Every structure is written in C-alpha cells, then in structure tokens.
Length: 221
Image (cartoon, rainbow, N blue to C red; front, side):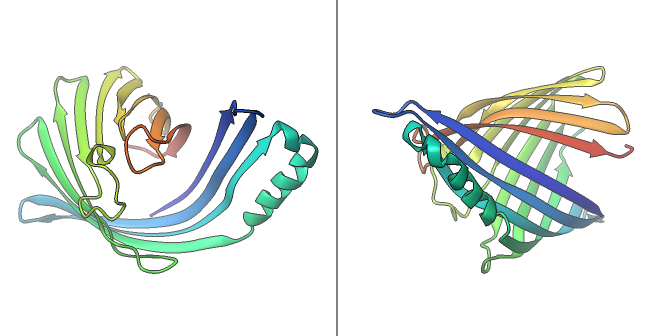
C-alpha cells in the first residue's frame, strides 16, 4: 500500500506579437494505491487499485497589459483548486523474462476506471534490455487503442539508464522530445529528477511544453 502526492506546475513565456505574456497552469494530486503480485503460468503478474483526488486550475495567461489585475487573475485560478476531481482505476499487468537480459511487459491501465465518467482502458507494452551491468535500454508504447487520437510517434518512449555507484544517469525521448534525468539512491531514500518535453497537440511539433519533475521515495529495497 502506498500514499502519494504529486504536484505539477508549468510556466511559459510568450514574447507575443504586440505584448509579452506569461502562461501558468498546474494541478495537485493526492491518492492511495494498493497492489499485489503473483506468478501466473510462468509470468510475473500484478493487480493494482488506485484512488486519487485532483485539484487543478484553468491555464492562466497574463500579458504585460494585465499587470494591474494580475493578482485578481491568480486569485481566481487558486479558487478553482478548491474544486476536486475524484477518480479510481484498476490496473493489471504481466512481465516475462525472455532471458537474463531481456524483459517484456504488457499492462492494461484503467481496466476498470472512472474519472468524471467511465475511462477507456489503455494498453501499454514495454521492453527492457540489460546491455551491460551498468547500462539498461528501455522502450514502451502506450495508447494502443488510440483513445487519445494522437500521432503514433507521440505514444513511443525510448530511454537509457547508466548506473554509476549511487547515481542513475538517464536520457531518452518522450513524445518526440528529448528528456534527461538523474537519480540518487541513498538506500532508504531515492531522489529522482527529470526534465522532459511533452506534446500538447495531436501531432509532433505542434505545441511543445517542457516540465521539471522531482520525486522522493522512502523505503528499503
């Protein structure tokens, strides 16, 4: 069982044609997750249940001409955080080790799920190859049912990880944009940082957005 929180905020500076502007958006998640694993016909299988609450605000755009009313615009956005969205999901997945270096996985996210109505299932496949003792290569493909209606390349993620003592150095491609990351493993504490690009449009190169993400995990391996 796990209890988690996640906050994502984004800031975008737009030089504009006439007036420069700053865009703000973000959300806060709080949830719980329960999972179990078992052997199934030679495969490692798992089931998980998620319950979460999300509070978000509509993207805000403040131009240089709005500086006098910026405080009111931000206050209005913060009021939206008081309205929460509740959802849950049941996930299922299997992992199969082809040999001592190659693993393949299949996951169905939101096998049963609801968030302001029923959520369509999402099929995700992944592969992991242990190239050397310190280097691991990974790839995954999501939204096989095309429920999001986006281009194929936006569903593909590629990555590599280099372990160097307590550090994990990471790089890859997410939704067509480069991403880099760093992990610090202190046995009972794990810090993870990532800087990655996201495509907000339906085709690669339409609306590029970059974000920072920091994670802290407490536990004993």
